[in-house]
Image (cartoon, rainbow, N blue to C red; front, side, top):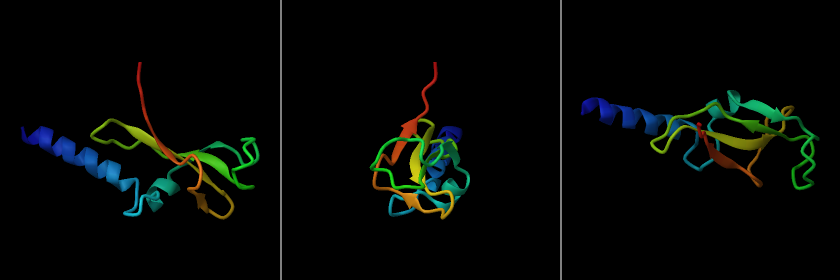
Length: 93
């Protein structure tokens, strides 16, 4: 029983480590993110110029593993939270 409780606690801590208290991405989540679309390739005029789309590493959570998708300027490191900032749960076969 203790193992189940500890497993749940670790999943919650992993999920919480992805975000700050204000709901933005933690510094670690941003630093370990991977670019999935380069700036200028998305074709959405609402995305500021110079911003690409990124995904975080996978984090465990009580609801299942997830990644966060977001836009960031790779030159300045500025993250744009104004559009399409979301959590994507990993789904398997």
